[in-house]
Amino acid sequence: MINLYINERRVETVTIIDLKGRERIRGGTVELHRSIRCLADEGKTQILLDLAWVKHIDSIGLGELISSHVTLDDKGGALKLMHMSESIHELLTITKLLTVFEIFDDEPEALASFAGETLRIVERQPFFM
View 1 (cartoon, helix red, strand yellow):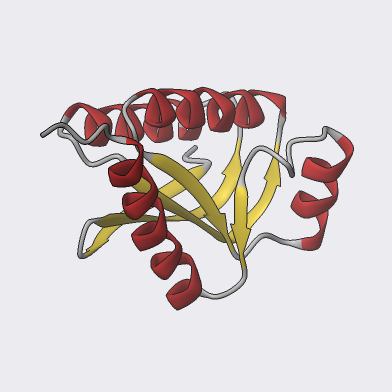
View 2 (view 1 turned 30 degrees about the vertical axis):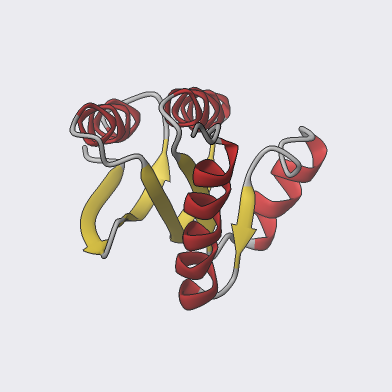
């Protein structure tokens, strides 16, 4: 049984991963892990997860989100979340992970936030004459 359906799409430099289903240790988490790692290895480190259709994230799923966040952050990228259900929002609040991820309800706003991320990375680079 497949627990998580994954669809990747690109908008400029951002990869949007649309998720549908229940994120668990079986099947789905392995596929999500593989998708994000492959994207990071290809240099596609600006990733937006659309959770509109995800009904539940278990502890393994949370661990994968954190691991993916760290991997992308280490490569100068970002993992941002969009369209969370109330129950997932509550779970991230209880686990204090709400402060780790940038969360959006609107796709254009989420995409625009990556432009600011790119500018911040550029600003951190030293200027030499």
